[in-house]
Image 1 (cartoon, one colour):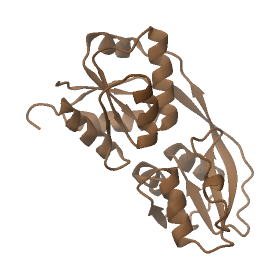
Image 2 (image 1 turned 60 degrees about the horizontal axis):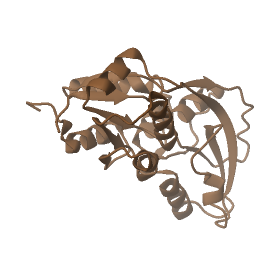
Image 3 (image 1 turned 60 degrees about the vertical axis):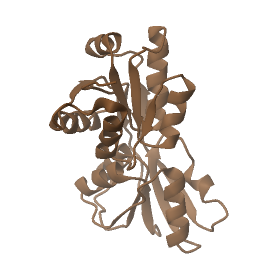
Length: 240
């Protein structure tokens, strides 16, 4: 299988960033966000907070809008989230380079019992960080800073690409995987020429359950890692 087409369904502004990197690699990106993000107002109290946990780039951007504080240590789930925190002006960032479970492991390894961590997160999360850290004596205080609204259908260029095949979908989160599957089900069937690169095993699960194959998992939870996974699927453009 060989294709130069990459389907990008993540929210903006991340979708455009992924598309730009894919173009630089010689791919032809097809952007069709299957969600939009609503930034929420939330009262931020950082009294007695020892660190901030971020489990998505949207969480990093939304939290940064709510406070001028940039000196607190940031514990980021992966490279894309760490990059968003860095772009927002945070200076002390630790990248777990993993998923929520990996971030929880990092926190339990590095933080003492009694540590208070603010988790700036979306309204819905795939894994509950406070639950993952239960029993470690670390208090996780959730702060909902954004809400994700699903978009039920693909754009016309995306539908055309799926019909023509082959195309590789890049999936940045478990929620994104579920939205992709729902949009495909609305089409009536999984296109034969659809393959996927997932940012984590958790993001790959809904795709495999829906019958999408093959699904390649990124070695690193970043755009570069996803595109490396696309290359392994056989999508590396000629001359790269």
